Length: 442
Image 1 (tube, one colour):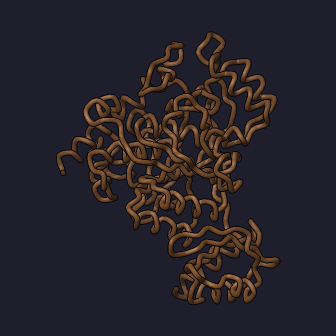
Image 2 (image 1 turned 90 degrees about the horizontal axis):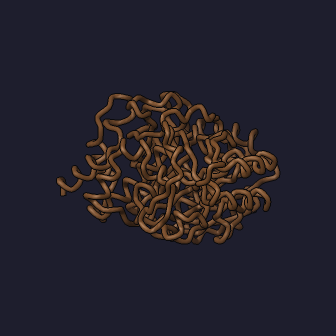
Image 3 (image 1 turned 60 degrees about the horizontal axis):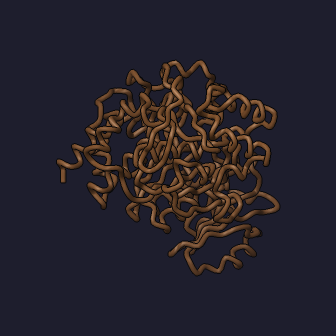
């Protein structure tokens, strides 16, 4: 590591320590005597994740390590990476939307109709929404099938009991609790709030349906009695984010399988260590695509190493460009071999909230999308997280045509979408065009 690079990293670590305390991620070669390092540098091991060739540790110290100590630790022969265990947030948690934003959906929710969608009974508005027409989803399914493989979703969890997802899930893991059986987002609610969401499953289709703003990030489509209960309970700011992301992946590739990896808490925050573990877990457990609907403003050696581990094993990494409305580098979207995704509206203009430039390799519609919401419900959503989910679904949709689909061929196919000049790649997602191009290139 050069002195200049170390100085920048040390400054970032020092800032993070002021915000988050003396909490670090240390990655070492497998077989390293971590106890010896802990004694030498005065840290305590909190958690670990063992991969085939290296082990990640979350460690704490009573006092922050000095810049000199951090530099010395990073130069130990068996140490791969050292970084502050920073907090990363899902990008939608600070962007409120109100019910007035539903105009693009017109009279879509006036109908109470349901429909069958590849083995599940769903709200018709979920399938027949403007966003699916924009990406030519029906034509893609008719001509090219409905996808395959496993998409790992690193997020706030997924409602594993949602009727639309019952046949779509494979086992996942909850890194916030360190157990495999609590990936459902409903575990983050009080019993009363969870019951309220579940009881609205039938009433969502009756005449008491209302459209209301319940959280900072989404507009949920729920019946009025449920709204009153949830208003009294209060929902965490990012609750439902993972289910909403999973809903759009499933919409695009209904025969792909979803691996729910809960690294984010319901308030939209996650530790770098948990994200690192989730990326490596997905890679080690057979994921073909990793959906990362989150962004971080700082370049992290630990996050970069995790991404390199995934992509070196042939996993397609798809990430949100972020919602700051700026031309900026956001991570992991800006790393090599990651498909960063920006958001467009129904007029093929860049969404005002969408980041662009280096963090957006491509784009997809990310406004007024109808998706799944915990408790068997549905939501209308805005944000680059949801554009990202559509592109992750596209990767799973292309897999039957090219089971060894890699970054280059995936990007080439995406570039055959609707040509735009928005500083977000060459094209906006059009599944039919991309799949046609992929088939012809084989």
